[in-house]
Image (cartoon, rainbow, N blue to C red):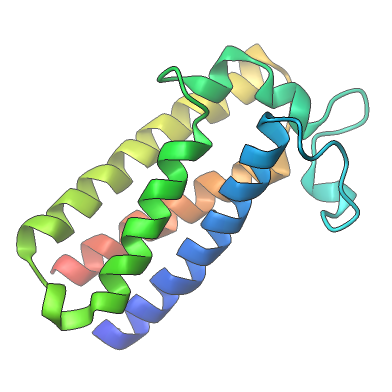
Length: 144
């Protein structure tokens, strides 16, 4: 896979992750209760909702909503791709890989919490974790 293809896929995934993080941020702060533009299948099942998940301590592992560092991560990824080869500093790519690894590790913990602690399947949450895993794989491929 060429660098252009990898970076193009990174842009698409980072934009999807950013949209997801913005949605969850708005929901966290009570700006979105139930939105017409989000298909029902993407939210938690009846008797629960995306907002219910966001009201737990798992939604703010480091004291702030998990979505806020996520937004920063996706913006950094997009900035890195836009800067292109003029910003091909090896340490910055390693920083992005490290951040990506942290998102995947945190995602595993949060998926465990969704399944075994909260007993709440959340397709939108799972989508975010899948995006982060794919982004990490692509960043590693970019580095080698």
